[in-house]
Length: 188
View (tube, rainbow, N blue to C red):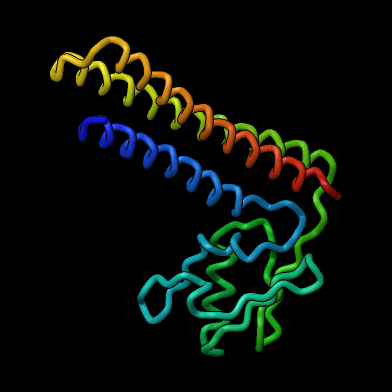
């Protein structure tokens, strides 16, 4: 395989990997009725004028599966952390006891579970679109290579098949992640 073809596949696979990684990040922030510390990844606290990730300035533990306990390393920041959680609009009200903050995750209603499952499918479809766009870009680049390097027709056909297999692999990964998350959301 020529260097240009290898580059084409590496670049395409990198785009598809990024789509899957982004999907995982988005799924981590979706509430499923269970306490998940990853939901706090988007929470930024104003720490002496510097926006800082909440998880960098506190210890976050899960208690009883439905409660997150946030223990700041610097107790003087507890009010700032509480404000940041409220500002992040997680849909959960923080309980501050002066030492730590507790976030109680109420069980989701059946209707909310269904809405969340639809949201999960939508996010999954968006990830598949990114994968398909990467495939399209790879095929376009392959056609350009065919012209510039006078690649034989059978080599082009073989590489198109490889591109399709790679695309199928990543859409399969997206599908399995979506079904896992749906199952998690729908489980009471």
